[in-house]
Image (cartoon, rainbow, N blue to C red):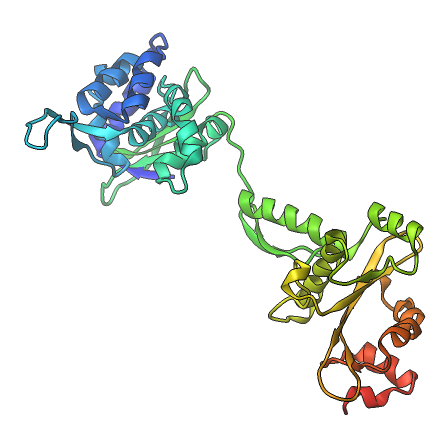
Length: 383
């Protein structure tokens, strides 16, 4: 992160950081009042800053300097009037989240400012908000990022310059600062590194080899989404023994694999997730099994169950109007580890017993074409 300031301000900040550190002051009551009111006047903010770290006063570092760095601004705020035509008193003020941003900046520069005293009082309301400014985001997650943020640099406009001389210091809280000057002793930049900062790998676009999910690795929200998707997809691609299915097989092995509008929702969930895997693998635009049976009561599903009560895949049959074959095989999908193991061959006669001679919905995969030709069912290919 880089911010811009004036040379005299940069010099004043460096001199202040080099001065003896004063006793720490939390100002808990002050920040509690600011959190309740939602605003703090420029004068009140100046008083609070100078009480928290008196070096700011000594080197004439006022709130407007840091507000300008952050590209914020004071706005006139008025006591709420009792009547529309009253003339209330007004003060140049910052919103409470903007004030928190100023405190966080001072803390990151190495001053003895504990921004969490204010941020902790804002977190409950901020966590409920649907939208936040970046100042609100920083306040919301301050307790997790304090001392861990990337290095902060303040720089100035000097035009051409010659040579660089560097000075360093470490603050009582472990912040490490490097101050750069040119050959004429004019300040160039100040970089402050947080004590617990560790560089994070650059975000990279990756595709998970196991689940196929494409995401930007290194972004927490994307990593979290990948973990959630990974677990959901692996449950389909590499299924584990299913307790409910084992109970259904034990109760009625012939009926257990079948799924229709009267079946329990957990069976429909198995069908829907495998229909979604079929959609994703073959780049269909929609899932060919409803999430809930009332959305489409017509299809009949079949779940391929292996001897360990794992759901290896599924197939769906759908009635079709007109004369001829009244049913069609709408789609079939097996997890990769269960393909070419004879699942379809073992159940083909069962499907013929229930549905008669049925059509096969195109497009037909090469594996399915080979299967049908082997059984002398080339006429189902429509070629």
